[in-house]
Image 1: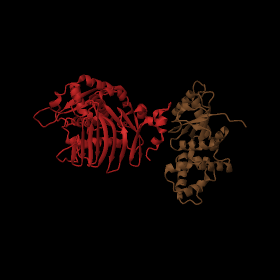
Image 2: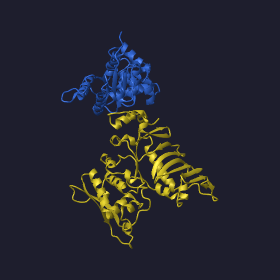
Image 3: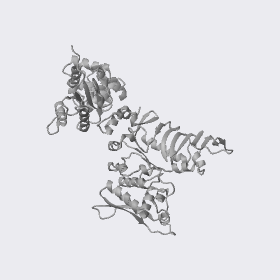
Image 4: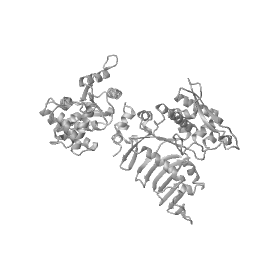
Length: 232
Length: 354
């Protein structure tokens, strides 16, 4: 089996606190050969550069353009990976939106020929993926609200990505609330502690186990896994 | 006065500022609650203690006046030092030493050395310098070095040159009034800078309300009026928006502050709208010997100020640390992203309070 070619990847991640931490931690296990660099123009071989942006689509359009320009200026990237929440968008529609934003310039593609675009949609948000970990769920919930949520839709048995918006105004709000309650059940209230728990190999492995037992669940998470798998 | 370095501790609350350095222009950035305003409060406190009583404060303050460096430190009422190249004033409780010589008389340890020896010719420049720290706010407070004149007519003839107005010690509002009356060229420059920011404004003028009489107790007041295009009547000062007034004061401060002034503005975006940030490019404040210390959360403001001027504020418990942007590796790298986005990538900024 031949050596896999060296790659350089530019990651643009939506979210400034949670997502960068999670992706950095998981990439260390999914693509261990990749070393992170601090400057976008410092990639050489088997490197990645990660930038995070605050806000959501379409407000991050300007940052996406800036990142695109960095990719072009550097000229050494094999992939531009954009990780972004679906929120209320349908996955396919959001991908189309972003692609068309990146393709506008008299119909000519803006992306350099050698760089491939990969859009990873977190459907509905990264917390939705995190709900896929069956180990997070208590045998018997003590909190009444959580009990009701589990009764209505138990995301350890059913696909979190297909879960509705419960008692919230948006899907993402509900999924985040659901996850928070699962943490509270374990008496973990501090967000930094929660982040430190999910940004681990253990958590990643628990999610991977979930998609092995239920392959039709967490399809956008599997897109991310598949992307990493193809490169390693 | 140019503030160079400051560390500060309030013994009563336990709040502590680790030593931080200042340049000519300083933009303090950091998440809400991290302590940016408290840093300005600490400087305000220094100003207060210079002239009043200060128990339980601990600080080390390095500054320069006319290129002479000074170090002033205070450890509550127990110890205080005021040192420069040619001299040292030291106090331990009530005992004072000047250049190593113990004075025979006890001195009040509640009052600062600056006050005790304010007429000493070595200390006087410091005393005068500290009074040049200005806090820009509407209404103005702690911005004038002496009492405002009751009757401007009585003093206006004494201030006919830019230098005398700048050094008058009066508030910026009073200085603007005097400039409006006596310095048409300078007032014209203020007007032009103002109209560049507020294009709807056509003109500014000073008006007097009330009758002047040396003998009567009635006070004549002087105020600013502005004229907007599309509105026939002049707008009285009381009807001018806070933002527009504050901007005028800021421009006034830039032209009329005495050289060596330190101007502090908390939450620049409060009242000073985004159109005001251009002021710093428009007016050559460095050559006027002005130092600015401002705080902001606003992305537009932060993006408008080059990050060489940023001071990134973080806090752990009660201890505040301030670092230059170039101390963060990430910010030293090339980037095509806007400054504010880059700031959001710094973990210490995002998770500013530990």
